[in-house]
Length: 385
View 1 (cartoon, rainbow, N blue to C red):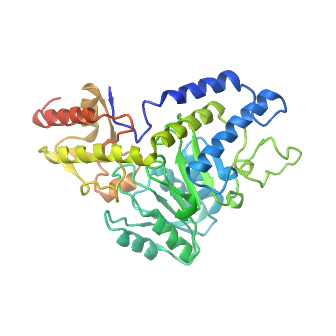
View 2: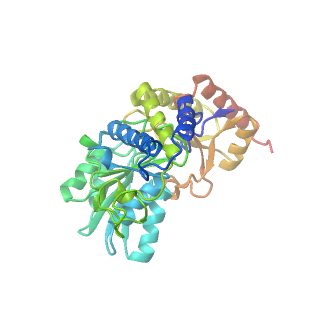
View 3: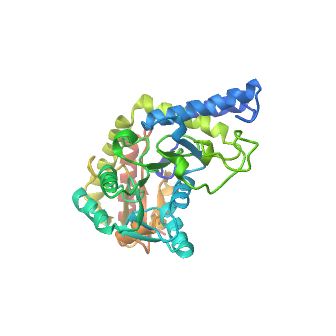
């Protein structure tokens, strides 16, 4: 199978990821940080090494800033529900995933929280930043935005939006599910206060892993409390990080696999992965543009304004039909709404969605060529049922 659904989760994983997970299951079977014996301490050390690796990779202030989560969605919820208070206002973008819009809507329904979706203008960062500026209110408590759309690949100038937030005293949460491991993210220079990301996408870790990296995580109200292995005599959740936001037994094997995934990206370098994937996306865009009956929704993707994700449609066919036909031809893509109705509303594809193609570090140029041949075949035989 030609796998082009890497925006959902990367596949294949580097072999060292599976090896690290197997090693963790075989050698670190004890509960980390819950006992004083050697195996428990070795398990805790494995987790700490991943925490250090993530802090180093994103240039965080230290490993204590790194919180392990089940996924990016959980990390986003932890910040939104731990920071925003009843009556607060939040500024977000018109391209957000449901990981952002659904908790915001739930908070609007239950807590009188309001939010404004700032318009993103592809290729015009000045206009995008100005839209965020105009959306700010006196009671704006938080800016929340994706680093790049999981549907259209459109990048947001998060560093400039973070600078805008600092100007007005408003912190920023960045959803980096589609960009961590692909685009450079430096928490020392970017001004990002809360970085949320998945472990199983561009970081090449296993599913069931995610990260919240917070400059001042202790300022967040907890949405879950429990055992941490520290301050066990107290009924109250510890205030020290990262235990303040981590309760219960962690996913040791997954965290070990995530550390191996981060190591893989570091060995390849995110820059080389990005340039490889963008070259494939640019080839794909040019090829699709030459096919009659293909609808593209963005300008040609350049390295300054896009991440390596591209969605399109075929005239006269639902996106799910295209996805099914490609599946029968041995090609895996994502079709439908991609859990991001706001992004589809922006491009007027809310009714039928779109077909999304997303390569990885392992995708070959000939695979993009075969994909284009398959699309050409479908457009010439559109009556196929």
